[in-house]
Length: 125
Length: 275
Image (cartoon, rainbow over the protein chains, first blue to last red):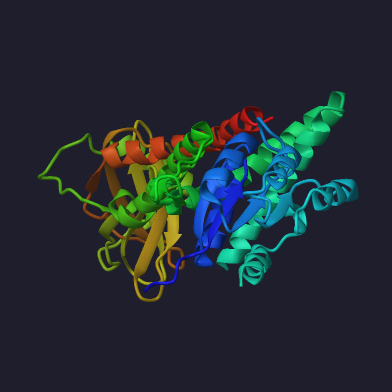
């Protein structure tokens, strides 16, 4: 029986970055779902129960922080690990995201995508 | 390589985001400078990210939806950005690809032309007066015509670019070749016949503009050492005409210039689309 691929939900409103992330994680042999705003991401998280969420913070409709707060408050989804990949490099944002339950925080300006994929693999191993 | 490319896209996108964030608090020239930088960054991102739109088609993105119990397609949003990038960059790429293809695949645009004999057509011959003027201008009016000096021979006319031409042939080695090229007026050129008896003379449009239609070529060899010249070579004719390829090359050049404008407009659109 074929091994079931791990499902990653990528939440990103910038289409160019979304496609770049898709390509990177597709090579990592994951199944990928995408959401382009916080509200859709929350709905998809509740319905799909992804194995991992890759989350941008600046999102339309619902911010990444609000998404994180709501999904961590839901017993059905709170165990899902969330990695934040944000444009915001301010320490306060990192602390806030980690405080809300994110397990790691990457800043886009100095993130290597292969390292990010490896990080996801390690979490899901 | 692929990861480096994707990382570059990530960094460019982040640069654009950071610049847009500070745009709100800026004034005057700072805003102008930042917008120009943003347009340039968006132009670069559009070109760099172009393969991304081709390699990741929306219908390929699937997800396992628990409530359906099956894989389902998940579509990307932001169609306008995708359309702008794909069409803008594709137009520019097509124009430059066409320009490159023309340079590589249409050598006949700048290749040899047909040489006509006098039996093919009969434009007005050089008048005796014109010939005399030319000879005087060349400072060889006193040269004696001798049968023993080999007459030059035209071997061909070659277009080098646009309406620039090169004429070439053979003649008495180590002599001066005097060439007459007629349009409404007559141009005179001198060149050297090398030791192997080969010569070549170029006419540039900006120096002597050749109009559409037939033109005659005539020449003789001049031996400065003993002040003699050969008889005139048999007059040859060639035709200057604008072909479809000329028109295409000229228009592609115009398009190529406009493609830069398209690229800038594309960058501006992408900036204001997501600002």
